[in-house]
Image (cartoon, rainbow, N blue to C red; front, side, top):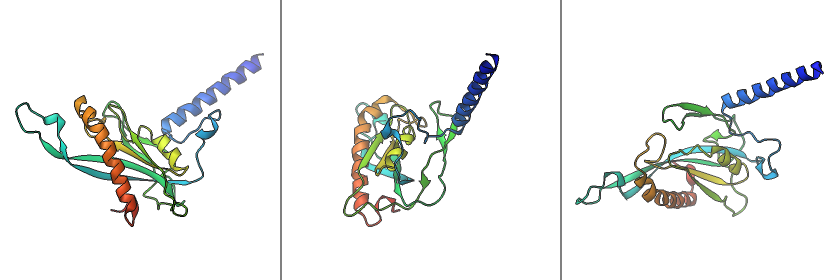
Length: 204
């Protein structure tokens, strides 16, 4: 009985130690063994790239003043894009990812390869596009585990850093209310436009 109790304690310590190590690594590509079948990653390699967009002629909600003309600016948006890639190279960590406190930065470990060569879709088909829009506040990496998973199954995923709504630049909620749907539509249209270009969304 004492032997069994000792084995149980040792096992618990090993499991706890493994979970602590995984947590310290900040892995985003782990799937529990009891997860549903569709939770498993697909067979495709994953590429990731950061693109900078600018939505021209937007109302600067945070600087609107009574009795004055509406201030207009070109609204900057940082977008992380995951996509099926040609396999080659080691995964690239996501470095300096800001946490909820707006100060702590961590490194996330996943499967994506930074700026990997995109894998062409078969025939005349195109990969479906998924837009990820984080909460208030948040950032484009909050659902990076889901983005990688979807890309491994043949999706292109674009995750938006909503200006005035991230951990780094959280502003008044009015900006989020007005701009979130406009950001989503703009990014959707930009991804469609870039997909029609010769070099696709990876062109500079």
